[in-house]
Amino acid sequence: MAKNNTLLRFKLFHRFNHFIIIISFFGLVLTGMPLVFKDYGWALWLYKLLGGYPTAGYIHRICALVTFFAAFLHFAFLTFEATVRKTKGLFWGPDSLIIQPRDVLNILGDVLWFFRLGPRPKFDRWIYWEKFEYLSLMWGTFVMGATGFILWFPVQSTSIVPASVANIIDLPSIALVAHRYEAILAAGFIFTIHFFHTHMLPDNIPVDEAMFTGRVSEDHIMHERGAYYERLKNEDQLEECKVKPASSGAKFVAKIFGIPILIVGLLMVSFMLSALVCSIVSVITDLNIGFDIFSIFAF
Amino acid sequence: MVSLLKVSITSISNNKILHKLLLLSFLFLFISTFSSKNLFAQENSECLECHTDPAEVDVKVRVDHVTGEVEIVSMLVDEDAFHASAHGGEDFYCIDCHADLEDVDLEETEGGHYPNLQPVDCITFCHDDPAEEFLESKHVSLMKENDVQTPTCKHCHAGEKSKRDTPRADDLYHRKDTIEKCGGCHEKFLHSYRNNLHGQVTALGHLDTDIATCVDCHGQHTILHSSEPESTLGPEKVIETCGRCHPGANDSFVKHVAHPEYKNLQYYKSALIALKNIRKDPEQIKSIFKSPQIIITITFILYIGILIQTFAGFGMHSLLIWFGTVLDERKEGKESGHGKK
Image (cartoon, rainbow over all chains, first blue to last red; front, side, top):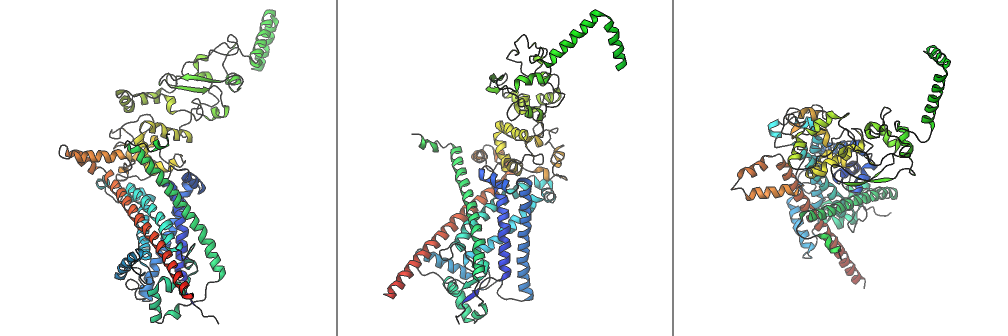
């Protein structure tokens, strides 16, 4: 009998939460980004495709509620683990997602590795950039939620600010700026950095199936997260984590779901990038710095 | 009534001369109604007979009597577009506006009429109210002070394909057109409008009355500066104006900066100039810091900083990881290759 060497990395609950975050995030980005890049043809097309005003707005709000639901589930899970199950190491220790002193050492070690000055440090359960992604997701959801509610209920939200303060602090305008650029930050980050760091690494390309099937091979963990593997081995937890390997059907579903999502995300980021290039060129030509950028085409 | 007519006809028919006259007048009526070349231009159908036929009428070069603009105008009338326009109702006649064509003898001019009509006068007989409001508004008096050409009615109230198809106030094309017409002069405010939510949605093609265009806030004909009490955005009326779309608008809500300046290079330039003149004129920089624009601008600059930092840092990081992993794999491959040998 072949030795079973598949470990469970994500429980069903986390996979489900990641799944609804994907769905709502894409709904939010696809209905929100056209408003930011309103001057470009792709934005018009995309906005029409998603129903235009006000349908796209309704989709945006529904997806926002789904995101809040996912956030609620996550914090309910954390509370449940901390109070009922009394799981230790949730907020401090190698299993925690809070940045640990060891992560600072890992970052320094990684920088040395980038310049070929040392071997790659052995990571624990969560690599430092995964922690950063998690924490920025928490921060981003908070900012987007707060500013989004201000924009959703502008009259009600301004009524809590006295008129004398509103002379300087105009909540809806500030919320719009914050919502817009936090959105560009979040969408840009997820579609480039998150994709490159997890799904499109040479080891995982094109999709890291672990997030969809929850299962990962022992070799993979040993290679990617050496410290975690050794910790599991020393604490005799390795056998507890072992599960049946993912069926080929589940792997297929993960790919069928993951790859189109990946393509849509990359397409979206290339749209945004093209708009950025266009706007930078227009700013330079607007500046009138005495150099006409298009003069190079005048032969 | 019918019996009365019969009686009068029978009484008339007794008279032979009158009888002949009656016949003649019926004949005349018959000819004037059914002949192809009418004697007098009166009914719309008479005008449209030629003006819907491309073989009869062509384009014309016209010089605008106010702006001096030269344009090529098609003399063809799109009947559907005309009937959809504000002047397309049953009780409107071509000669109501083209008054100099009234009683023109079409026979004398061989089925045509003299080619250059007087410009249409919208104001004198029909639209004296809005015209007076507009011409006496602060907007126009400022334009006159600054020697700017005052626009005519037709400048803003023009149809999509022809100026003739005067759009209704809530016509979607008209609402889009007025944004561009206002923005043609107030370029800075058009840009800042597009930065705000109203402008974003209208830029994406939704122009219905539930999203504000320029005229929804600033008024249509009486356009006053927002500092004036009678203005739609003045302290007295602003709550009512905003409240039309945002029920329950309050004192804080109406302080909204509808024209954020953070993407206007001129704003940063004026801030720099104010900073230079800080000793000479400290009020200048104070007014910039007191305006609600400042916090929006700071938020914007902060976010641009965060964006650049994040993408530069993490972009570099993911590239380095890619190279590192690939190089490591190659090294491992070589080592294992050596081992096999």
